[in-house]
Length: 115
Image (cartoon, rainbow, N blue to C red; front, side, top):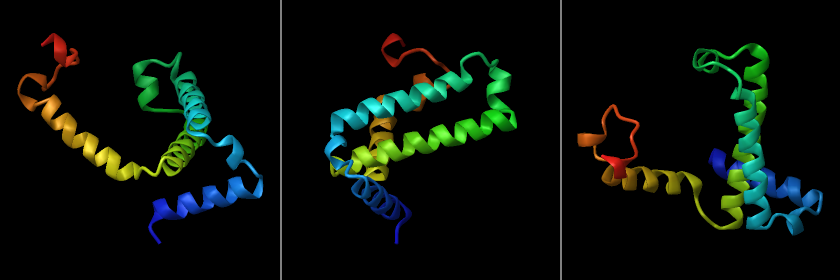
């Protein structure tokens, strides 16, 4: 079985066993997702750029847990909306290739509308 499908099935089972589907509306899942993303930011908040690229074992473990939470909420949200997340990401990369061509974008952090 595809790992993404297996994850979706495990999430459905987990939520079903707890009767949580009633709470897993797209709105609630999106809000929960934003909270988990904020927890990733919190781990990195006061680290230097260098420290953020070379996490301590404690920070790495915390980051792993939060990335897991973000992934779970994102996949659960996409499942509830019947959107395939990998396909959506691949399509978005292709859109971004057009929106951000290498010429003029390479090596700059300026917003594309400012170039």
